[in-house]
Amino acid sequence: MEINGVTIEQYAELCALMADTAGDESKEIAIAESKGVSGSNWLAAKEGFTKKMQDPADMGKTAVAFMPLYQAAQDKLRGGAEPCSLETYSIVHAGMAFRKDPDNPSEKIDYQVVLAEHGFTHQQWLDCEGYWTPRVGDAENEKFDAALAKEFSTILQAESDKIMGISRD
Image 1 (cartoon, helix red, strand yellow):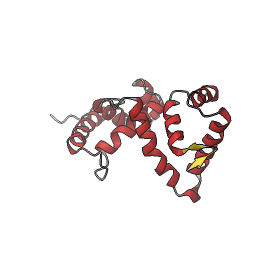
Image 2 (image 1 turned 60 degrees about the horizontal axis):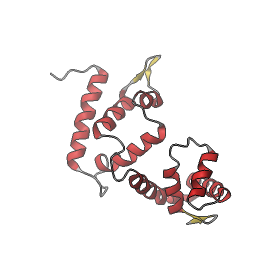
Image 3 (image 1 turned 90 degrees about the horizontal axis):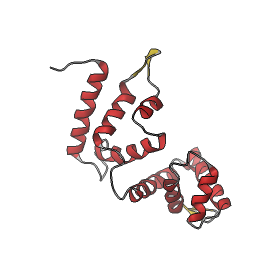
Image 4 (image 1 turned 30 degrees about the vertical axis):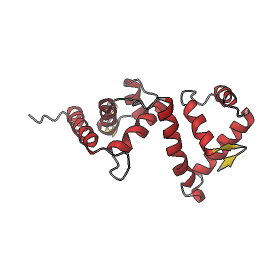
C-alpha cells in the first residue's frame, strides 16, 4: 500500500517519529524531509492514509495493517524499552476507568485530566496502551504474558479500590 510514493511502512515510521509534534505541520514536514520524503508527499500521504483509515468501506483494513507497523516503529525508537512501567499503566488505567468528575459525580473524569496528572500527553498514553494492552489484556495476542496480566489485574484492583474508597482488610 502506497500513497504519493509513501508506503504504509514509511508512514508508520514517520508517524512514530512525529509523535511529539502535536500536529505542527512544519515540524512534521521537517521530519519527513529528513527521512527523504518531500513535504508535499508527506501531506498527501497523511491525508490519504487518514481518509482510508476513516473510510467505512475500507472496513478497518488499513488501520489493521498500520497499527502493528506503528507499534514496531515506536518500539524501535524506544530501543525496546517500556514506554511506562506496568504499575504506572495500571494506575492511570484505573484512574481513567473509575475516577469521577468532581463537578459531576455521575460522570467519569475527563481522561485528559488523569493523563496530565501523570505527565502524559495523549500520544504518549497511546504508546503505553499500544505496548501494554497486547501483553496484559489480550490472551489471544502472541505478546500476552499471563504473569504480567495477573500483576496488572492486582494493581488495577488495588487502585480501583482506593479510588472508590473500598477497604479489603
